[in-house]
Image 1 (spheres, rainbow, N blue to C red):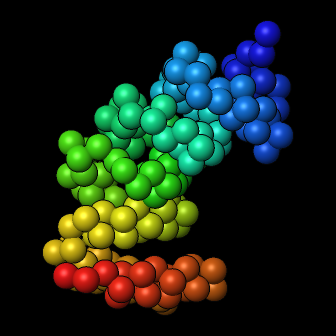
Image 2: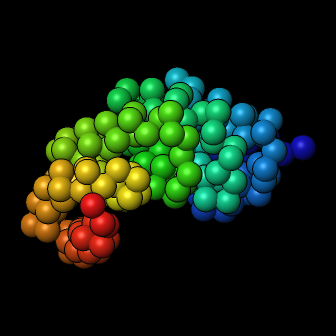
Amino acid sequence: MFNIKEALKREHSKRTSDLIVNYVANNKNRFKELMDLLLSEDVLMVQRASWPLSYIAKNQPKLLAPYWNKLLDELPRSKHVAFNRSVFRSLSLVTNLPIEIHGRVINECMDTITDNNKSTTSRFYAMYTMVNMVKLYPELKDELKLHVEPFLNHKLPSMVAGTRALLKQIQKIKV
C-alpha cells in the first residue's frame, strides 16, 4: 500500500507530487494523511507535502473545505516558504471559497502582499487570490491596485509581466 510519508521522505520531485495527487484522488482519509504532514512540526514534511496541495485544490477543491481555517492559522507562523506559496496558490485556484473565511483570506493576502520579507511567489499568489476577492468585494479594487502597482518596478521581468496582467484583470472589475 502507498504511504505518503514514506514517498515524501524518499524523494522531493514532481513525480512524487503527482503520485500523491493521484493516490489522494478524492479520498478524504488520504487527504487527511497529507494534511497531517503539511501541518506537522517536521519542516521537511511541511516543505514536501506543500507541493501536491495546490494540485489537489485545483482538481478536488472540496477536500480543502474542512482545512481552510487551519491553513490560514498556520500562514503567519509557517515552517517553510513552500507552505505559504502552496496555500496562496491553492486559494487563488479555488473560486468558491466559503464566505465565512473571506475576511481572513483578504487580511492574510494583504498582509503578505505588503510584507517585503515574504517570498515573491507567495506575494504574487496572494495578489491573484485578491483579484478573486475583489470580484466579490469590488470596493477593495483601489486598495489592491495601490499595493500591486509597485511590483511594476520589480527586478524580475516575470514579476513585471505578471503584475501587468494582474492590473489588467483588476481594471476590468466593475465597481
